[in-house]
Amino acid sequence: MSAKKSKKTMSRSTVLILLTLVYVFNFLDRQIIGIVSPFIQADLGFTDAQLGWLKGLAFAALYCTVAIPIALLADRFNRVRIVSISLAVWSAFTVLTGMAQTFAQMLFARIGVGIGEAGGSPPSHSIISDLYAKEERASALGIYSLGIPLGVMAAYFATGTLLSMEGANWRWVLIALGVPGILLAVVLMLIVPEPKRGAKDVAVDVDPDADPVKFSENLKTLLSIPSWWNMCLAVSFVSFGGYAVSNWGIDYIARWKPEVMAPESFRNLMYAFGVLNALAYGPGTYFGAKWADSLGKKSVRAYGWLPGAALLIGAPALILSFWVDSLTIHILLIALYTLTAGFYLGPSFALAQTLAPIRMRAMSTALFFFILNMIALGGGPTIIGLISQHLTPEHGPEQALRLAMTWLAVPYAISILFFFITAKTLPNDWTAANARNSGKT
Image (cartoon, rainbow, N blue to C red; front, side, top):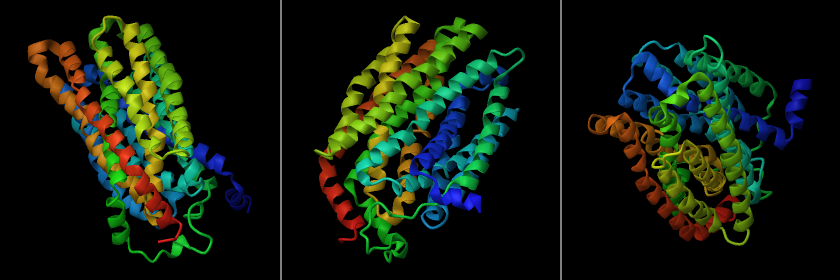
């Protein structure tokens, strides 16, 4: 009785915090392979190309594909249960990744992590959108998006701490980070309630659970919205760079400044990057979302031009960071990039929800992530690994990776262009979505 009562009375802030914690584990388990990558390469002898497959396409392919049928379930059945089961699955496969002895075994484990994580964000976005109105949705999803910097920060801190212990290795890190996720999954399923769909959007006399519009018609509507596509492509190409940096940044430092791989120096480096994500990516994500909501009250175009303007500052700083001689300056330039890179998260996730038909919200996020992650997560780490592998015979491992990372200027330029195109197309699409979801059309 008390459990049922707690589910009914749980505040939306508590639900948001718990879902954000799930997202922390999502990115913690996703990011960790890139952080311990130099140790895996030294232990198991993987090439840059093999590491690229493990960090990118092996994870992304089924992550993206499985997200579609899971989203179909989430638009019809209990979303909290789906998130809980997914969290347990990807956490268990993170543990198995730490036990892998061969490339094939680790490839299988990474695919398993991807399958599990496919059920995390689409139903979570849908739940949050049923708890917060469209005028505050970017802020709420911005808070949820803090799971990214917090997850990355936790991954750096955990790696630095665990690997500084006597006798510890990269396997300890993966196993130690997977087990708590399984425990959180149990807690989530027991205490979090399933909210009513469309409660913050539909008119009083409209029942979203009795939506007569067929799935195929909703899907056709969703995919015919220009701003949805423009924002999706903008986010895909900025994330292409982001995933490449997060998965190859430590490898680059290990080749450029090999002395930092000594235990104490490496621990300090991990703590520095953990703090960087807390003080740069976290505020960038949170205040970028709040700023977008504030400016969006005057003009919804802000949801498009604000992330694009931020990247005009951040992307050049990132490229320059790979051509400086000082590790301190390198980290400071990465920090500037990281601050600006967080600006797009709240606005883009909010648009994926607000522009979608109510019964397509989980599917909207799943399709959004399908395109995003096939381009970004599947492409970024994998292509950088392949470019680096190709250039290594001529330039050596350090310069090859530096040149590969410099090539990221191309996807960042494409991203900025699509953010500004989104700003142009958004007003008409926003108005049409408001009319459709309020039951006026």
